[in-house]
Image 1 (tube, helix red, strand yellow):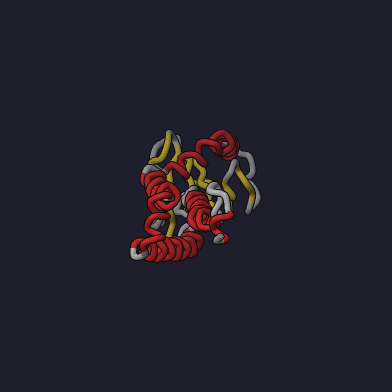
Image 2 (cartoon, rainbow, N blue to C red; image 1 turned 120 degrees about the vertical axis):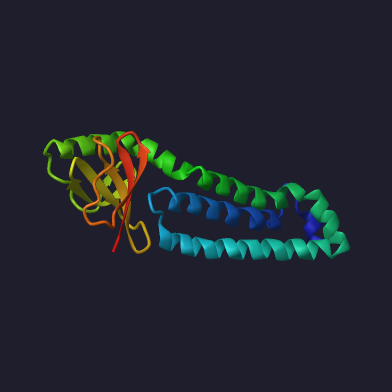
Amino acid sequence: MDAAETVPDTWRPGRAVAIVPTVVAALATVWATSVPGWYQMWLALIANVWVFIGLIWLLTLGRMLFRREPLARLRREWPVWSLPPLIVLLVCGLLYVSAPLEARFALSRPALDSRARAISHGTPLPADDEWIGLFPVERAERIPGGVRFAIDGTGFFGTAGFAWSPEGEPPEPEGEDLYEHWHGPWYLWSESD
């Protein structure tokens, strides 16, 4: 009797190897893209993990396609082997509609609104490296007609964050700041160094 025959059909190591790293990479990707400007350095690392997962998946699938016995196994376990590509498609869809950033912003909006209004009414700026909602704010600064929050670790060559400007798009005094309307008085903001 083969050792693989003694393992119940509900658990085989190949299933965990096929799914667990993919789920971990998917969760890491969603987390890294849930801030304005994304966590670029983390995404570079995660991209390497995705490439590794893809290569392993393709090599294993290719090996199964060119062997008679593993081909029968592939036919039996196709739901397990189809999960990684489906997870990749799900993550791509979430990124396409900005779902990670939308969700994190929605959960943090009451805290961001409250802090922005308080600062615009004269409350001192928060300390550097303080959390506002679910966002680690590197720094906050007043701008004409509003406030902007730089999110820690975002962007690649510059900083990214949110700008609160109830009077419309904030002015661009230095010409390097970019604003994109987000929700209500909120704008996505990025600056380059």
